[in-house]
Length: 327
Image (cartoon, rainbow, N blue to C red; front, side):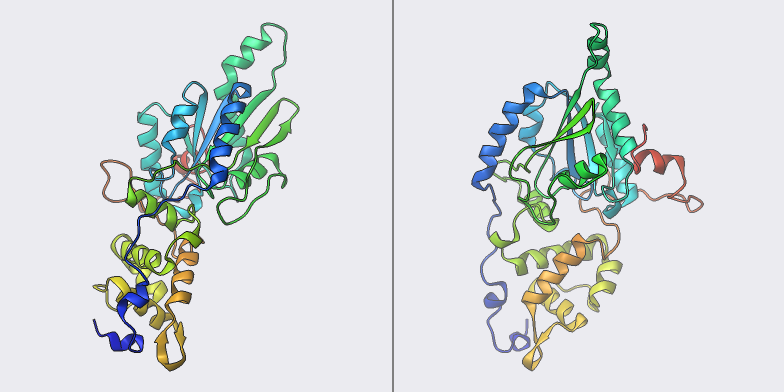
């Protein structure tokens, strides 16, 4: 690599440091886990949210163990940012494992679809109490990793903004009960990771979507790894968005190419890699490159695509899987 492109700086200064292992488990998460366990006895149904772009990485294995005795619904949230075919494949995979799963767009999804699934999950308990002459209030706990959209999801179901939201992890720091109807309450909980992120591919995927706090990582290295992945799974979209002409580039040279392509330069024509890294991450997270899934369901190398004649907005399959129908 020609280091003259960096104004005479050593490449290690561009990357700042050797890539470090990603791990993030702030102190409030241990407390949040204890509070979650304390509330479980009051809960009838657990709704687990994962990110539809990274369904494997965004499921906390500790949560599965904690709530194993509760009726559960798995929601692939932010489905509007993920590839539709890949999301259908993930739903089929989870359902084949006996998991009640649906996809949802917290911004435009229909609350009715989720409420129908919750009612179905709680049906046995509601009928049991009705036989005793009691109108049961169903209590639902919403769980998931940080920044997966739990509070936005809760507000969507409620129809108004009650739970605090934000585009960074850690906004919700305590349990928040929200009354949806006289007989339905939702508990919005803080995002929980597990103490040790052994799988670094999954840890990096979590970092790509903003689950892990950006401040603990080298944003340039993270952006480079994201660009490298995008150039493999969505090369046309990535090259067009960041005006990258050489698809063989990797490492610091790839980030520099994006900077030059988009005009993120400092005096002297030096690539502004700090700005470039920040924008690459922000634009991916906001869906500016289109609908992209970073992790495919097992035994699937490429996302499934609708037939040419299908209108994804109107097909029954799409309504069931993307809008959250029974399916």
